[in-house]
Length: 457
Image 1 (tube, rainbow, N blue to C red):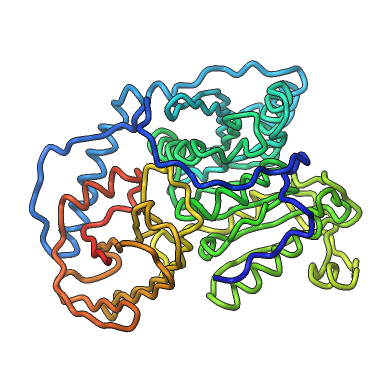
Image 2: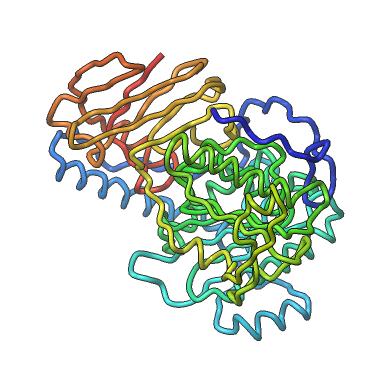
């Protein structure tokens, strides 16, 4: 695992300047008082190895799952929207920029923790479904009134220049420094995405996350722990608090900061993380990223629309020698992010097991899976359908793990070659309906339906 840059500030901090508490071990997941909806299929057929038949089975199971979920009282309760109560300024912003948008407020729960969210739907639905933009507000360790104000502002901040999409501004679950990434936040984001796929016809391969200030802190924390969900991420004016980004190999990542955002060295740390992503890209491939250091700007800059504003031409030259050569660019996050589509089954996955969120109601990451007790080490996995081959390399992994497979990854009618740390095994792998059922419900994403699992100890 590449070394994470050491922040130049003396202690990790939030974007509001509140010192971050020393990280502690996360508790074992607890049952939720509001469980995820489940479903029971009408039939349990024996799966064949034929690719076309497997695709038909996947489609049939997905439709049953979708129908069951749409009839769920839990889903109806947590997605049924009401008209938000906005301030005069917010009403004016919507009237001026989003007069044709559909705007609702809803809430969902994980145990006793509630996450409120405002949904803004803009434009006609594209053929493949709407893109989803999740927006995280500033504030953090501040009074509830401050966070409520920041949340209300975020309901239009990044949506004013949006042509088409479902835009969801989430309210941090607690008024703490980590308002957007409390332990309960992660399963709530999973469920939010799952519900938007089902009820808003969102394209699961076009889900993006973006945040400003404390919301930028949230993007740093959430993206590597939930990289399997996102097609792209934008972090503006946040602090990474030492987070490891090894897991974002397949998530295009945009970093933004003002050159004078000197509080806790956010400006320098942003440039250091640009260098960190450069190192990861050289080591593993992937890690598409763009870093914008805004010229003559502090904590705030106009990243809320597409009007070009000046940014440094060479981030590393600015960091190392103070080169302030600049060019005006469009820094509006949705415009950069929308150029990317998630590959849910990337040829290569790199998984740092120490960077996880163990309250998520899934133990899977792309097509890899491991119990939360397996919490250290690195797994690198690749597959080739043409060669019917899977290769896995591990470094210091402290427990069992597995890989899910489906007909998009291998041909089940032929033996599959599995290579683990250089040791090759050739085996026949039979599709299993139980695995298909489990993986359909686990993430509520039709791209993560699998028919087989190979386990390793």
